[in-house]
Amino acid sequence: MSTPDTASIPPARMARLTRALPFWLSLGLFPAILLAAEYGGWALLLPPLASWGLFSLLDALAGLETGNADTGTPEEALGWYRAITLAWFPLQAAMLIWLLATVPAAAHLGAAEKVGVFFGMGVASGTVGITYAHELMHQKNRLERWLGDLLMASVLYGHFRSEHLLVHHRYVGTPRDPVTARYNEGFHRFYPRVLWQCLASAWRAEAAMLARRNRPVWHPANPFWRYAALQAGWLALAFALGGSSGVALFAVQAATAIWQLELVNYVEHYGLTRKHLGDGRYEHVQPRHSWNAAQKASNWLLINLQRHSDHHYKPDRRFPLLQTYGPEEAPQLPFGYPVMTMAAMVPPLWRRIMNPRVRAWRRQYYPEIEDWGPYKRAETPLPR
Image (cartoon, rainbow, N blue to C red; front, side, top):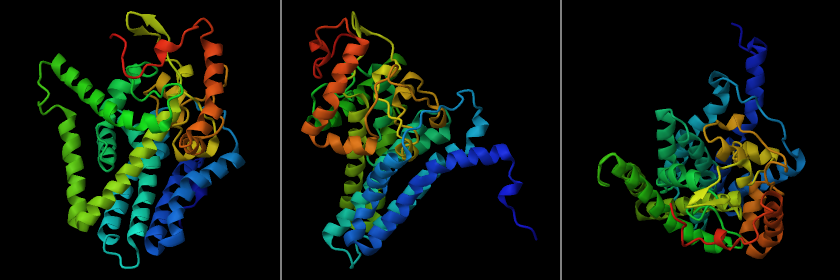
């Protein structure tokens, strides 16, 4: 009996597979987590090293990817790209369930090591899982949107979909968007602010949508009830598998993932604002309103999330078709997200790297604006 080989695959299909394979490198995080759970100690470093460390090194070696895919590529040609986003939830869920069933009672791990294992799991569910959830929630396909909700429930942050789609994309670069980090706002001030402001703004956005349909906020159509039910399901599963220790460790995983998400949110729009046109109106979102990063390897890990300028310009584009821009069209980050998020944890270093770039961005795109004071206010939104 003959066995299939690569020669039997049509050349066009093989080319698509070859181009898609680097985006599957994220699966390497699962063996790193398994080793951390099995050995503890030094192995606890493997998940962060396999994501932040390895891809920072690969960025330095691989350089930039400045080429763009054809935006007219048909949906059926994107199967290998879509497959990784569809496969991630069952794999992440299986890993979480196995960890909850084994780690809380593991005799070979100390308490700190158990926390370290779930920190590493949170690195994976935040760095990759939430990134894939972000891609899925932007799609019209019901399965993909449900997978996005399930991924966000697994980190206890279900309202992110409502906030992201109804608030962030609409108000990015304005004081009405909690997620747009203000100029000179350090991450440690930004983080607690977005945690409560995003939840509140997501609730208000869904309530407003229901009101337009003459429905009360407690109507079953409010997705917050789905978010709550899915999150309660995960917490119940954590308790059933690992008791109170399982719930606590699951919370460590979720908190780590949320921290990862908001670090990325902080980097993506720091100091960038849309021009206020008066009467609460702003210019349309353009590529210049998000930081662009063309680092090749970290875009593999983050399925082109760093092509964020194009994502906000064309939110419906699937990740393989997102375009990158040069400095004449969009502001450029000096490094990929793994390095930039680490820098964001040290505000003086962050300001030294980014504040001159924000000021240069203002001179390049808005030389006519002399008073940037109104654009800095985070607590007092301008009129609707």
